Length: 282
Ligand code: PAF
Figure 1 (cartoon, rainbow, N blue to C red):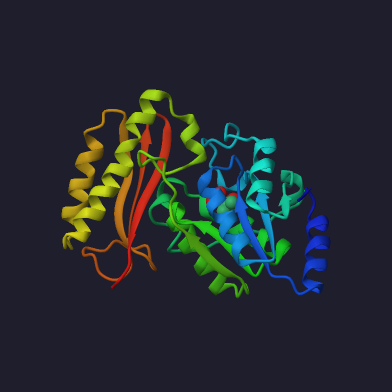
Figure 2 (spheres, rainbow, N blue to C red):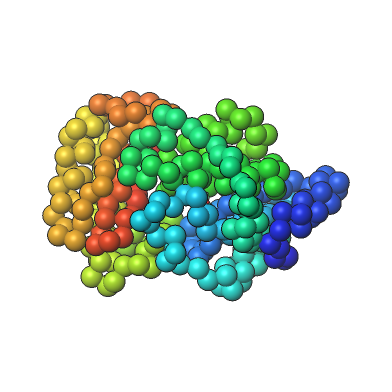
């Protein structure tokens, strides 16, 4: 497995692979890899001849008061995990490689990006769309893999790929959870033991929501009320948002009809965590 930090080095490797007719998978990450990322890498390995993992904590998707500086990083461990999972190339650029002096272009989407996380993180999705477009252009993969934990991000990337005619198949992979239900996230590392325990309200609320939908409840209001109660009962939890939206438009929906996303962001102490469930039309 190779580790490279420049665009030219990636292009060189990709050119050779393409000349040999090999299929390429990309797993974009911000590093500090956990089983969620590994499930993406393993899926990519099973479906492609060569797999690139990008590890880049992208400054443009963090707001001024967010955790860019403190975002956890451990390149050595990430390298070991990527190697074990079967990746072929790690692209680990410095910010200057991705955003050289004079950089002034961005990919901006409206609508989908204004809902849910976009309300409290106004610059986030522009940063994501810009960096993911760059990664797509640098690596020119056949397939790219994203986690369903970031369900809004996944919907936005699917839309962007369609709108901008990227010739890339996007695959979403299910949320990977700890044994007790907490969705795996690099940010879980911020939680102290008391907060780690309190953080279980997210997955408990998700579980309740799924049960309600499976038992035939179709009113978003009824489902959200009961889920909110679970979260509000935890003194360390503060809801940023919890909403049920149409999966394709990210607009609120009163009933569970078609493909819907029930998504939440909840502060546990100072740490903002997200979780969700998706209900597909029968
Ligand atoms: O989901 C993430 O880790 C990031 O948003 C991504 C897609 C790697 C872009 O920086």
